[in-house]
Structures are given as structure tokens and as C-alpha cells.
Length: 293
Image 1 (cartoon, rainbow, N blue to C red):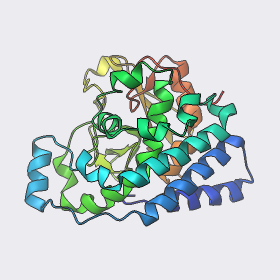
Image 2 (cartoon, rainbow, N blue to C red):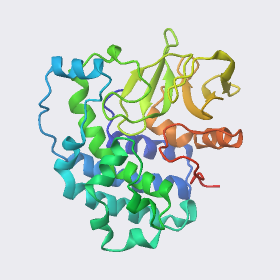
Image 3 (cartoon, helix red, strand yellow):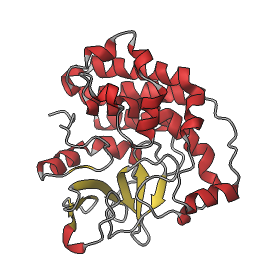
Image 4 (cartoon, rainbow, N blue to C red):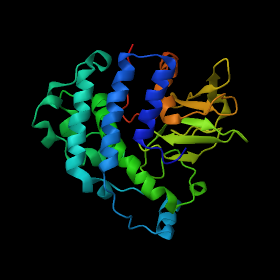
């Protein structure tokens, strides 16, 4: 499934909508989002990486992701433009996600979306104090930055992924961009668990009996819930109170397309949150979900 483009995900979603004869405001939102991301992704120019295979390997051994903030900001004008376009989409669907802060709609906000904010987000350091003190929903801002940077991170992943052997990496975060997974799968042959990055869609192998978010390996505080068909699992950790959606390909009757599955399984998110868990890939703590009711 590696190297999936936003355009491919959009096509899969459109195909699913046609086959199922199903439409909703939520699906329309994701289609609008993916159209922007696909268009941006296709016109981004990524320079040949300065990393060679040995340097990339050494970085992974030290636990360092391959993508640096300095690599991202080479497309800074396009990033700010994409952020504004993504913000406009969220605004158009305010009935799903609530009112977008008026501050984000101001023309001068583009100047407030600083490189420091993006660096903090990419490195998982949280919002700068100047932004955190403003009347902006931190979860909403996290989501906007996430969706605005996705096409850039996906393009970088496609360039960098062939530099390394993914078997070297056994950490809970992505070896390309340091993002956390939001969905995974159990492979058909032996049921090994693979994670998919919520940011750049990179996949990597990870232990079954271990929480990717806090590293918990105590079987007494790790469990999973499944559906009647045995296709979908919700892995939960009682230590950090997170959940991870997983598709069991051994029981899937048709080929699963994970970037689409993360959209079509929002009910699993609801179930996890109703049980008192939160999505492990979200960087903001103590937040209210923006999943539509």
C-alpha cells in the first residue's frame, strides 16, 4: 500500500460513493479536502534528497526521522496558501466541525501562521505560547495544519522511503515525518501488524503486543475489540487511554485501501471515545473531539 497519492484516495472515495449510492455532508467534506490535497500534491516539486542510504540508515538507528523541518519550508508560500484553502473548506462545513475561529479567517492570519508554529507541530512540541493564549481551538488548529501539510509530507515520503529498509524501524512514530499512526492492518499471511502514519501514509511494521503511543507492553492493560466479521479491530491501551483502528486483512473479503478506511471507519472512532479512549495520533491533550455527532 506504500506510496499512495491523494489523487488515488480521492478516486477510491468517488468510486465508493458511486457503488454504494451513498452521499452525506461528511463525505462531501472529505471530497473537497482531497481535491485540494491532490491538486497541491501533484504540483509540488521535491528536490532530490541530500541523504544517501548510509546516512539515512544511521539516522534511523539513532531514532531520528528522515524528514526535517528545513526540508518542508522550501515550499513555504504554497504551504500558507494551502492552509488558507483548507481553512476555507472547514469553514464551509461548520455544521460538522463547529464555527471556525474568526481569527483564522482574517487576512492577516497568514502572517500568524509562522514557520515556528509549523516546526512545533512537525516536531510534536505543541503550540507556541503566543498562539496557545489566543482564542483559537487548539484541536481545530492542529487539524488545519495536519490537513494542509499532508500533501507535502506524502510527496516527501514517496521520495525518501526507498532510501531505507523499513525493517530497521520499530518505534511507534513514523520514520519519515515523526507522525503517529491513526490506522493499521494485520497482513494476510502471518497477521503481522503494520501501522500507517496519520500524516504521510508511510507504513511500518510494529509489535502486536505493544502500544505504539506509550510503549506499554503489559498484556493486562492492552486489549482490542472486534466487529462480528472479524475485519475491524480497535486496539486500546488502559495506560495512556488511547485507541488505534486496525483492519484484519486475513478476514477482509475485498482489498482494503487504508487511506479510505480511515474515512469509512469513523464509527470506530466514536466507539473508542464512548469507551473513554482518545485517538493516539492527536497531539493536543484534554481536547473535545471534532467528529460529527
